[in-house]
Length: 438
Ligand code: PLZ
Image 1 (cartoon, rainbow, N blue to C red):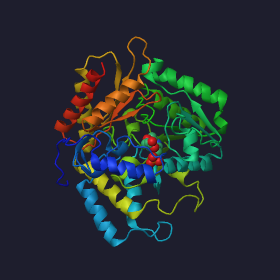
Image 2: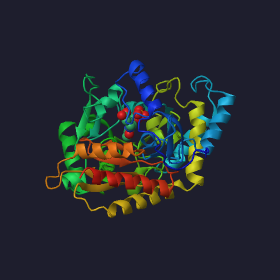
Image 3: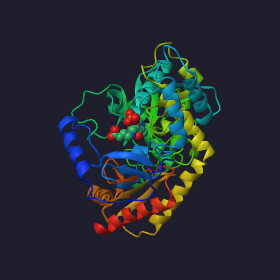
Image 4: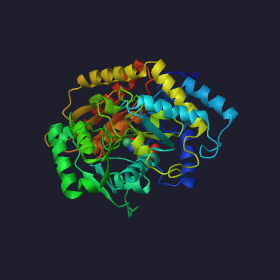
């Protein structure tokens, strides 16, 4: 790891003067459509710390939205990318291919759920990979409809905006959206009180009456929802949907962009209930911060696409592939799946000691955990509380993110390389934020 000291340090007001000056430059030259969670500019990051331009050291509970799962500037990733950048930066895999792309596809065949024959295609972003999964499913089935769920987040491109549920800020003013996208009710145990089987019956009933299996190419679902609020469906929901898809010739796509690559204590969140998706979408954590995404799936589905039908200039860029291979080696050699489970235990134990009726639920898995905040009594979502807790954490040098359809969820996505000490310190600050806003 870099020599960045693994302690929190708040030596200026946040933002400090240099960050404040950079924010002014940002305002002058960067589209305001691109927001920032914290108005501080980073210079270095490693382990559980992000250092800013004013010399403050922030504890990282966000991992750049679940990306630096192995840690920012993880040593193997740094070495692999440095070596690759000196050899060649780009040839375009569609022009003259290179081994690392194939090695990533080979690793994905081994790491994704199921032992059937699989193939992969590599892309740059999560949204791009989700779009391509839909292309593959349509090509294979000859059908056009796509079912997604309440609270879903699948991206910001035209098709994935249509697939994303929440209008503000993701969709407002950006329509018209892609056609043939239908929304089904999600299993959200805290709010619907249904068992997995009941919620699946409700969703399938709606799909059958409003879409029809014969028109349906794919069901796309996040096994644990990300931006929508870290919603964990009730046990049995995902297997029932996957079964229904299998029976009806519908491609079952797991969007594991946020939940995948070790984040939840297994390589993929689908594994927890032994769900074997037809297509798995990976991104974020796959390459330690280099832009890379993948669709991995059943050979017969992947083989249905005509040659030249998939691709892109940069998809599976050699730097990103080198990084991905180093990420996989790091997860496997450093026992990071186990580390994700330890992080879950630590976070859950910390919140078990908080007796506060405004916390409706602590949920998630591994190092993908969240607290949902409500108004006691009514159970109404309390976005203002989430916002003020996050603001408190930010002022104390802790990077926290909120999420949820109603913005009332605080999520924890620490890098797995964070120490127990830093994690505990950061959680204490978040919990103190509850007190401040009482
Ligand atoms: N699918 C499940 O979580 C990205 C985006 C936040 P891209 N989530 C963070 C924001 O405000 O843009 C995401 C995801 C799931 C797809 C995506 C899209 O991945 O790499 O951002 O395109």
